Length: 395
Image (cartoon, rainbow, N blue to C red; front, side, top):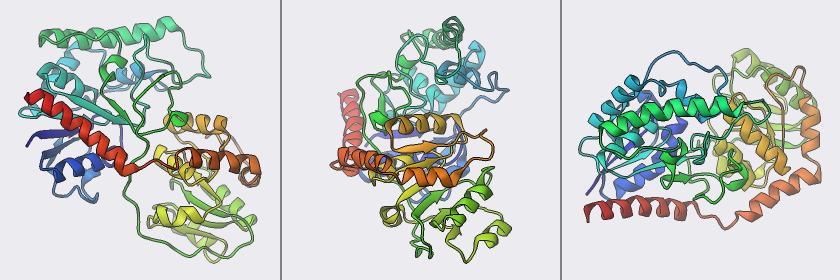
């Protein structure tokens, strides 16, 4: 059978590996030789189904970021050395070495892997929620729509990346790129829905929705209380954590909140009341349907799962991608959001507002719209698409 490399180059945390995992497991079950090239080896260490899949460190560029607040994907690539011809050449050559003998690449945020595959003449696919897959426009569309961004500056940034990339492609006899987004054109399998796509200008695309993801096993009883049932997942470093918990406690909201590594004093402060702070991941498929609403930071997976269950959301983004997703869901009418810099946020008032019929109904609209979505069928289609490319290559 064929050798398939699953690649992750840019970004952080385990979400990149979990995004690739279902396809990797399916391809291995069908007899293919599967291996990982990962930015962080530890991120795949404890994930179910990953322990016996070979993994090695992915080639990455290490250096200072140029833009603290990148305005488009081109500027994101500047932060990873893509404007330097020598760096790009070394990076792609390193990926070419790692891809020796591979028949296909399946990537999540690994532009260098796609470029290397392009020079080697092997098919590559990008599995993504869309943030790192801009449409093929010049320049790549702005991400911060609310901030002024001179087109001439964005275009100059994109052209610097394209000059460096195309010099290496030419050295290997590969066709040049006209835009950064062209690198993903025809290769993207978007694990999202049009309503959640952070590029509303994308136009027709291959949307596969979310696939099944690993989840915890805990299904705790709801604590006593007179308020709504709130299912939540927040980070322990979230600056508004204590005020959020205090607001939930004041309104007697029956709350199950996952917060890994929460300070023991904070956990003790709310123990015995209507708010239960948990360190062990819960079974989302069992607990979420019982909730009235969801509190989270706006990760794509949690947001999509909540909407598919017909639950409105209070979204508390901590980074740009979450903020963009929040804006999309708020405009859709199924969520309210609190920006990170808002002082003295009134979480209780926001939760009360979310229980109004208009927000609940918009969340249920989303659930009804995609009630027929079959994650297993979507996964099978993705696997078939990769295998079809392998068949064409061998032919």
